Length: 330
Image (cartoon, rainbow, N blue to C red; front, side, top):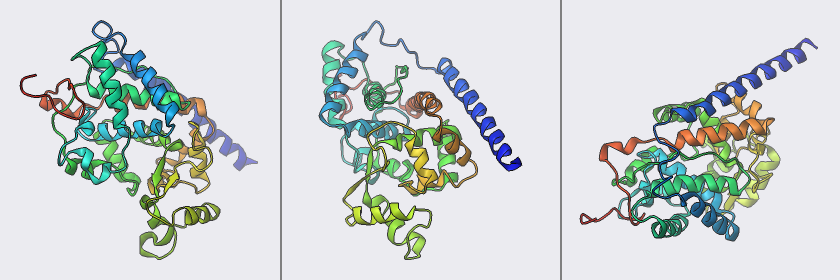
């Protein structure tokens, strides 16, 4: 009985701590340098255009929602949220190995064309991608949050940086924490933003080593639930096959992702390690049973992610075409 009471007290304490952190995170909306009303006069229809276009695209292809969220993550993790992932030229981030399964570029191009008609030479591709990621989340049942605006489009994009910086699902928690901290994010942001894996999918190539030869043992990763392992073994005979990140509710934005980790059903190693590392496991446990807290914290962490601005040294611009830097005569 004493052990049970102690467990309850620990859970209650952690719950209260998470509510406090969620409240603090929400208050951080007021501290960002980017304003919410940046386009209120110059492009007042921006958000309605993005929202309408996102609804149209997701209705045609549901998988574009998590794809655009991932595109936003990749953009912000390299040189900040500057739209550099959208640039298409030899040696750009878009051509990196880390980017080879990214999708949704055509959606951003489509939105940009509509925005240019309404507000020429005004809205950056970086801002469009950030807003699209928010509306993609909402389209699959996730939370809404206000997007601060005023990002500029970067003019530098290199595949080497993308391959060196973007997490690929094999990293240890310590490596991820150090990387997130270098971007102004913390341990809570790491666990909460990882919750985006409640939807979406990945290629079997990214996890086959866990199924057949983990750490050179010629055996599977022992952390994998045996029934889930059998399923993955049948599903992932070919590296090019796709598998859902959340095997239980793959098309629903919810806390099932965290429940899966508790059962040994984290698809990527980086996901499963969140439940075995003492710095992140208590957060996983708390979020698994508190969807309201998860949603509010996810919104706050996405705002923090969207405000990473490592690109400021090159000044930036507002691209006319998201795939190309502006010509000198612009």
